Length: 311
Image 1 (tube, one colour):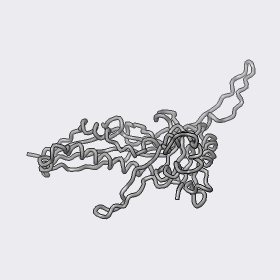
Image 2 (cartoon, helix red, strand yellow):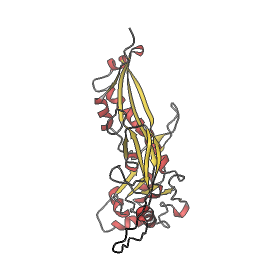
Image 3 (tube, rainbow, N blue to C red):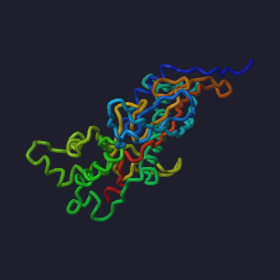
Image 4 (tube, rainbow, N blue to C red):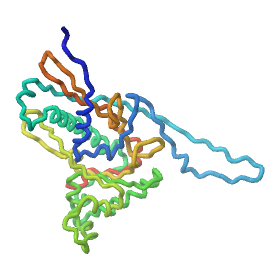
């Protein structure tokens, strides 16, 4: 008799994976999810024809000035990302009642898949070759220099240039956790709250200071050590800051710094799929999580990047 290896798309475990997403991950906030039905395809890019000055004067009996507008295209390809773990029957039989090995396994796999996606998002959003409007701070220009730097003015100085490029003011700001710690101790920012009863500044306070709709603190960490070696932990988003424009949701004719093209491929609306299948040769159940995506900057002029914002 052949091994029983029928694949089962586990709806219950998929719900677990969505419910337990790490709150520190911000990839979805920087790159809104754009669900797609094909693994690869083209998407349209509208030109800036709507900003053009044209002669729209029309004399009686004359024809209206006829205009033209243009489109270009680019492509995406949603790479597959998946991790799996075996749950031997012996492990399940020995597990205490307080342990749900299926849920624990699903949560672990989910966190690890989302961790790799967060690393990919940070690598894209903080790449000066991609986000070409950028500055690398050093010395007295770094926001951790409380005497010489002025982060509020630095951010304000970049809002008008972004508006002139995309026709929208930037509405969002992301800072890594080390940058957040420095900003809430900066005298220029604390001065805004000196007559209030705020003991410690929180992200919502900084959202008000920088006058943006969204203020994200990227605090997720990664372990760069090889398996079995001593842990080597660091912040995924480094010591960087990003001012950018993002829409409420992804959609047609929607401007955004970037999108996360996500191939659904039988998965739920977030693109996540959990499978559980039997491997009799190992006397074990296999739980597998998968996600297909392409994280892509589509409007680099919709952002400004500060590298090494703090020392």
